[in-house]
Length: 486
Image 1 (tube, helix red, strand yellow):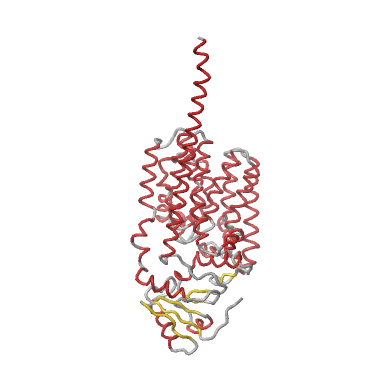
Image 2 (cartoon, rainbow, N blue to C red):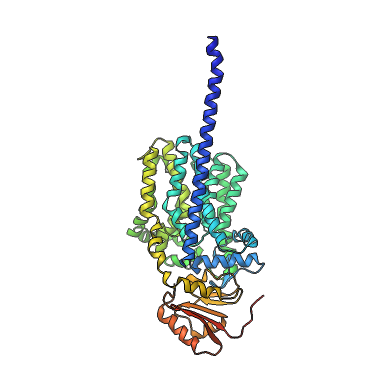
């Protein structure tokens, strides 16, 4: 008996040490997973940009705004024709401009985006452990990273929603961990990213209040969400843009203003039903849920309340890009889909519960729906003019005004005046720019080859412009006399 009593403390100490070692290994593996994912996402978006696949809408718009803020100038978007806050009231551009003060480069946006998307795996891991799924925590972090929307949105220029994504997940973890002030900070950062995210915050607040019984957090989220929606849609966006929110036109069948749309949603539900019950919307819901359908159940469905505003906005929109996993519009729904999976597994439910089965399903979903195949086809379509375009860009002086194509513009946005050549444009409108850079072979979004060639011929016959570069259908014209703004 004495021998057994003497060995027991050593035995417990050994088990404790083994447990600590096991936890350290899991932490270490998660760090590697997040780090590797960040690198992959950053390289993917950077290569896409280098191949001239990024565009003015939206990378050029945001890059110009952040650059101007970093230079102490008014962030007036010459692409849109108004102040950047008139777009989506995204205050996040101001702290992001601090990075441009170190060195002005669009690659900061790619780095922030890659890190934000990848780091979302960390609060997912914590939420899984919080739900008692210690053995599945790393697996669920991988499930999040393999969700096709995470990879695809990284390839579509840059959007501030990507910063909101990990903060939404973090906010839920903070609410459950009773870290009230960190919860409020997370909500504040989300609201800085985009005005429409205020509706997602309201949805999350309702879920926290009714289903999680987190009265304080739920009340704060609902209050902050409603207040910010009223401030942005009623004051900030109209003040800085001089018009209604940018996306109002996608709901024109409901009205011409935010308030008219909201009123008709309540008073004329029959109009909305006709838009909801479509094959496009059914296909959208299948796309959204199929990568995670193995882990969705009625038992774990409560967190999906937080996704309702985002999904509802997309379903009733008269705009196809809001119904896919390529664009940014479904990003706010991702945290709640993952939370629903965690809730399902914590309840002992789910079509697949083994870690291997979950990873295999997620991997298949990624291979079918992630757009990595674009690097072998679609993203290579400008290789024939790639060298010429780079050479032409190198001859454009900094700060000088530029008229160019959508894909080239994102490489020249660090200036106060830049805009796109488009087919409806009058030829004389081009005369106000110091440089005109066009690719008649790849005229870009909003333009066509015929219009691009017409512009080239027009400029060739003018004495106030000279052709300074020409190769493989890439033309660079420079105004003979001009002044560069300070």
